[in-house]
Amino acid sequence: MGLIFEELIHKFAEMSNETAGEHFTPREVIRLMVNLIFIEDDEVLTPGNPIVRTIYDPTAGTGGMLSVAGEYLLEHNPKARLTMYGQEFNDESYAICKADMLIKGQDVTNIVAGNTLSDDGHQAPKFDYMLSNPPFGVEWKKVAQAVKREVLPHAPDAWIDHDKTKVGYEIPFNRHFYVFEPPRALEEIDADLTACTDRIKAMIEGLTA
Image 1 (cartoon, rainbow, N blue to C red):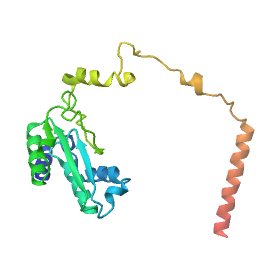
Image 2 (image 1 turned 90 degrees about the horizontal axis):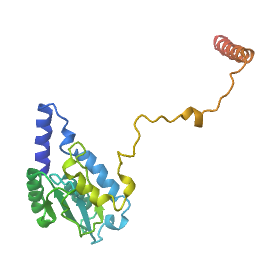
Image 3 (image 1 turned 90 degrees about the vertical axis):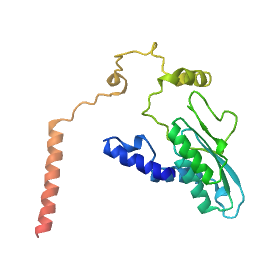
Image 4 (image 1 turned 60 degrees about the vertical axis):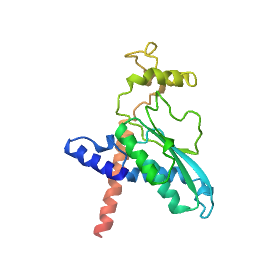
């Protein structure tokens, strides 16, 4: 279901001269991401091992990343079970994701609606894996204060303090990194050129001999 919706988005984006990648993540990119997160988990990829893992996508969209992850794990270890969690801001995408999870037999209560930045729907749980393609091109000024409140106490240097930044400040790299070397003498350069010319002549003579 999600794949059909993504294909429609792709077609309409082409018709409106937009970049389709702004609205969804191509499946080949998702497959690469999924391969990377599972590649070192030998336990879950061992065929016949009845293990349970959890995966979370904070910007789930239509659930494409969750679906591909589940398909990948099923292909390599049918006995394993992947419990999927997600959150999505767009109402239409959220509804399709939830319906897709229902078809796959997942607990649909694990898919919640809302803005992950300002209203985290999964604050308490911890997950084995997380993968996401955040909508970097979408304006998020409305939730900037919420992000600051959550991030700054843990990483105070993760934010740019524009009151302390300098505009037009020049760093003289030449002064710190450049070491002057005087040019070679012309006689030395001429000798190198003559030797190079002689080598070329010798090679040509060897070919024509």
